[in-house]
Every structure is written in C-alpha cells, then in structure tokens.
Amino acid sequence: MSLSKCVTHLAGRSRTQLPVLMACTRAMSTKYDINTLEKDNFLGLKRLPIPTLDETFPKYLRSIEPILTAEELKKAEQEVADFIAGPGKVLQATALKEDAHEGYPYSYIQKHWDDMYLTIRCSHPVNVSPYFKLVDDPSKGQFRRAAEFALAYVRWTRKILAGALEPCPGGKGAYLCHSGYKFMIGMSKSPRKDRDVVELYPESRTLTVISKGNLCSIEVLTEAGEILSVEALEKQLAEIAAAPAAKTPICVLTSEDRDVWAATREKLASDPANAAALGKVDQGIFTVVLEDAEAGDRSAMSRSLLHGNPANRWYDKHQLVAYKDGKMGLVLEHSMSDGMNWTRFVHEVMADVSGSGSLPPGCGPLPQLPTVTGPIAMPTPLHFKVSDEVAKTIAVAEANYKTLADSVDHDVLELPFGKDTLKSWKVSPDAAMQVAYMAAFYKVHGAMPPVYESCTTRRFFVGRTETIRSCTPEAKALAQAVAAGETGPKLLGLLRKAGETHVGVSRDAVMAMGSDRHMMVLNYLANRDMKGNMPAVFTNPALAASKNWLISSSNATSTPYIDQFGFGPTAGDGYGLGYLI
Image 1 (spheres, helix red, strand yellow):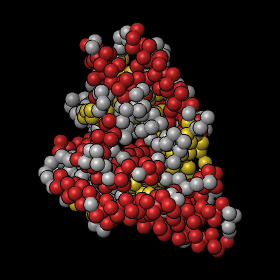
Image 2 (cartoon, helix red, strand yellow):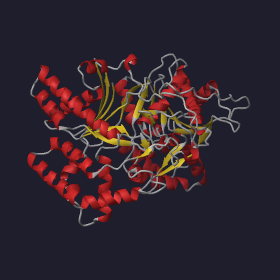
Image 3 (cartoon, rainbow, N blue to C red):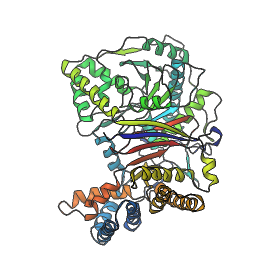
Image 4 (cartoon, helix red, strand yellow):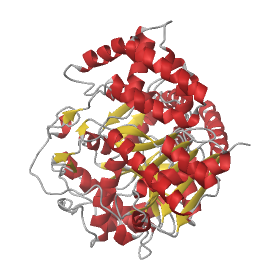
C-alpha cells in the first residue's frame, strides 16, 4: 500500500535563536473599522501585481526542467513560446482588464483563491486543516491552561474589534495586510452543496466547547463587556468534561466530504431545535476541545492534531485542543486566513498567558476587561435529535475517517543542529532545509519531486500566499551529488549555489512574482473563453505533473510559542513537511 507521509520537522530549534518574523516594529495609532476591514485599504498597500508573461513563464520552465526529459522540456519551451506570442497576449489583456475595477475581488487572484477553498469537497482533516503544537507548561493542568488561553484569545479579539491591532511590518517601511484578521473572530465555514459559505459572528459572546462528542456553549462575555474569570471558566470546563460521552456524536460529520456534510446538516437543521443548536456552535468566538486522554509523545500528539478523534473535533472552525496532561495544540480552519495570521495571535495570546513572555516589539498588551461580578451563566448543553438516517451517515463518516487516518504515515524528526550551523555554512537556513528535503527524496525515489513551499504576499492588499517552486536545476545538481556520495568542498559549493537560487525564487514569490497564481488565473480564463481551443501550455501533462506536489512544505519559525507544526500531504503519494528551524 502506498502511504502518504506527513513529517513534522524540528531542525535543532533553540529558543534563544528564534527570529520573531511577525514582530511589529513600532506602535501606530492607525485605526480601522472592523466591519469594512476586508474592503478598506487603510494601510495604503499596493494592489497585488499581475506579472507579465515574460516574467512568469521562464520561471515556470526552470521549475519543470528538473522533472522532465530533454525532449519533454524542448516541447514545453516551444508551447510556452507559442503561448506568449499568441493566446497568452489575449488572456493577459483580459486579466488586466478584469482587475481594473473597484470592489471585490480586490486582487486578480482573490475570487479564484476564495473559490478554491470554498469549493474543495474533500474531507478537511489531513487535506486542509494544519496544526500547531503549543509549548508546554507542566505547572498547569488541562482546564487551567485551556481557560487561560481561551480568555486571552477573547481579549485579543477585542483588540481587533476596537480597530487597535497594531500593523505589522513588511519591510522597507511597508506593512502587512490586516484583512485576514477579520476572519479570526467567530468565523464558521458552513457547508453547502458545491460551495461552502463563510459566516462571521464578530459580536459573539460565547465559546463552543467539545468534550467526548458533547457540544456546549459558554457565555464568556456579558452584554456589559465583562469577562469570565479564569477560575470560573476552569470550573465550567471541568464540569463539561465530567459528562458521559455522546451516543451519536454529530461532530464526526464535519470530517466528511463537504457535500455529504452539507446534505446531512440540512437534514439535521430541518428540526428547529437542531437548527438553533447548530447556530450556537457556528457563533462561538472559538472552539475549545477537551480531550479525555493524554497527548503522549511528539509523534502521538502530532497524529492526534492531524487526525484525532473525529467525534471530538469541529473542522468548520478554529480549535484549541487541550489534553488531559495539560499539553495543547491548535487545529486551524484555513479558508480565509494563513500561517502569519495564526502565528501572530499565538504569540500575543501566549505572551499574555505566560505573564513574563515578551510581546512582538511595538505591540501593546491585550486589553484588560472587567471580570463578571454578578451571577455567572451556566454552560448550555447543545442537544441534537438524530434520525436513523443521520446516525447511519455518522457511522459511515467514522469509517471513512479511519480509512483516511490509516492512509497517512506520520513522524516527527528532531535534528541535532539548527539555523546557526546552517548559517555557518553561508547558506540560508530555509534554503538549506528545502534542498535537503529534495536530496533525501531523490536518494529514496531516484527522481526530483515537484515542491510547494508557501510564502506570504501580505505586503499587498488582500495578499495571501504564493508558491515558492523550490525544485530547481541547482537543487537537482545537489541531490544527484548527494546520491553519488559526493562530500567536501564540491558538495558545499553545490549547496551554496542551490541555496542562492532558492533565495532568489523565494524573493520573487514574496513579491507576488511567482508563477503559480498568475498561471492559475490564465488557465481559468482560457477554460472560460477558449473552450475547444485550449492553449497547449495548459494541456501539456508537464503542468499537471509540476503541480502534483510530492513535497508540500511550510516553515513556521516565527514565534517562540510553537514547538511543532504540521499538515497532510497534498498528493496521495507525497509528503507534507511542516518545519521549524
């Protein structure tokens, strides 16, 4: 059986060595309106640029060179030349024209990217939802840690709502786009047939809690703006955890195929009481999951966060997962926000919880809220009437989930060196890790893998991510040398050359000058406008092969409060590599 691999990688990580990539360099008085945050470019950021054909396609050709034969590459080069000279001009003009407007979409890629995430029909665990393991605090137990984190997160969201979240620097006096933070408060991805819907509840005053498949709603904020004390929430969480397990846990359904979940949710919601309970789940500021077992070692906890008990997860929302031994992690809903949004909230929230941790420079403390002084509202259990038909769907979903989880081989690697060692070789640490992954893949499989490394494009308004196509001719030369047993100065020279190339590819991607997003839009326009006469560049198997990401990777080294990071592979026979350096 061919197993997918998900490897969480920690490269000799040292707390004192960690760069704070999300650091805010100075406090600003800039204010925004949360209601229009995704529309108003209050930081005056540039619009996401559309590369020229001559900028995009040479990069694409270099990225496919290592995985093609000389004959295949020559064919691809001719198709690219024909495209640039002919239909590419028409499609490029269309892309530029359609981007020249006011209102949504606010970039040429935004609607296509939103559609991609909202029309994905596969199950979200493994395939879509990444996870962070938070640093441990052995001095505190499960309910205390969960209560402290949840309430600090609630206070962090008040900072966003007040228009007071400090801008983060994007280099050279610029800042990073804030629009994604709107989707960090009471956001729910509600299933619908063919295309899901994003629902926002910024005025929510409740948390959703899951324990043993039971769903509860806790009011943590009063109408007067008072917040529960840590002790009060800690007690309520303990009481919820003491309840017996749910007989028919509907949470499992959120792990299913999205159309199946959409149809089943509609059946559940046909009962008014069920509809009201589902609404309560959706409206939670955040979801707290209480596990009835210990997290175990790194590998066991990673597996649990990637594909844990589906009866105790709600994949339509961001989730804090708290284990019996006090360890905690986050399972994140990826549709409208990305890694740098998440690492910032983790940094601010965990610094507040620790009481002694340093905030990102320039970021002020979380707002203090008055504690509830009157009667405390008790948790509201959310009960569901489950028909025999829905119960059967739940049983099938459980079986499907087990098949999915069993298809993933998962491990955690910790290397005895870190970024200081890599820098001593005069190589970018991230570049060194990327080319090392490819060299290992080549040694095992005898071929170069198409590689996806994500990077942020938030220097631009509503920018999200671009693909760093790490597979280059220089990386292939290094991989071949490693496989041949090369050592010494020659190997170091090849490593440095591959590293320099990777840094250049990364720099282009960060400035929205990669090839993937541009080609995605051109391909869409060709399908829409040139039916029956698709340009050969889009039908050549080389394009599909180059996007069959046998290595899907991401580096989350940006906060000292995350000590593990992972996600599933995007290809059935590929690797998902989340790493920290």
